[in-house]
View 1 (cartoon, rainbow, N blue to C red):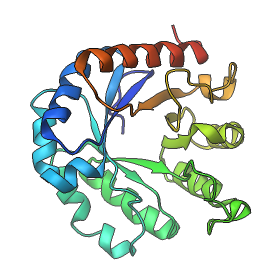
View 2: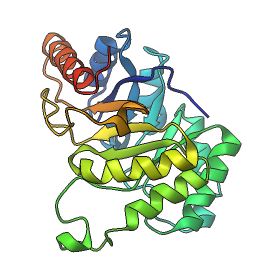
View 3: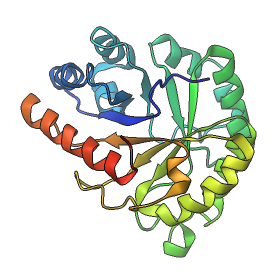
Length: 243
């Protein structure tokens, strides 16, 4: 399943609770050829409802919207094989971000349901903050994300979210995952400012795959947002030698 037409580009983060700001962000970005789509967060959904905010966005753009329900994928398998994913799809969402810390059976149930209703599963195995893994004082074992990504690839999932400040891990994963699924579609989070300083100057592991950066700068005005967005894209593509 593929909903993103660009080989490389930006995914615009939509997480402002105000409808007017969501409209402004979509208006500024929907015609830019390097904008691949949108990641919808929970704040506007909690305040306005998933259907209303998705309908608002779809009136102004035909680009895909993936929904980040904040760590979706940590219930029992029966929940996900039921109606919840269908409800999300019916609201106009094109893809769902999954962080399946509860195990492979949960991941399998989500992927099976997503394939049935034509909803793109995008798998995340990592969080960017220090303290997530057991070696950092967290509860998640260090090899957990590797297991998640490998299980996802074996289930046919090639759309993955990876944290840019864990680039050392990404290099290892890409080799393993390319051997299983072929070309990956990687969505990068935790890229700081327009400098994209966490991205390495040369990373062939990333360049052979599709790469998208998630742009989540605060919206202040249409002019400033578009200017910052352009600078962010320019820096991102140069780091990956995208021309």
